[in-house]
Image (cartoon, rainbow, N blue to C red; front, side):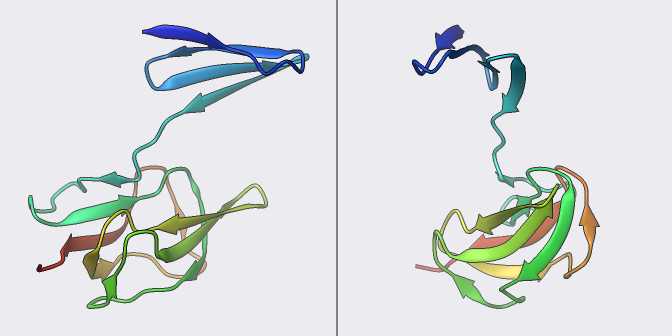
Length: 120
């Protein structure tokens, strides 16, 4: 379902599904909603992975395998085009593996960290 948006600053845009096109003066920016928690290829139904929302370089990793994390906890920082993005845990869980390290280049959708549900 499509829609339109505007902010009163000479901008506007349109949304279709998970894609939004924003018009700002003479610039057009296309945005895509990404679900950072996705099933990783080859990972079982209980384990989940934090997927890279975009290509970039891992500049910091704050967790290690076996560590219990809380929803909203910072896990790592991904940098692309001099912009840093802190990736956070989406739920209380246990880190089963960290697949990348500082300095690694990753592609969008790459599994960065795998998790299992935290026992209640």
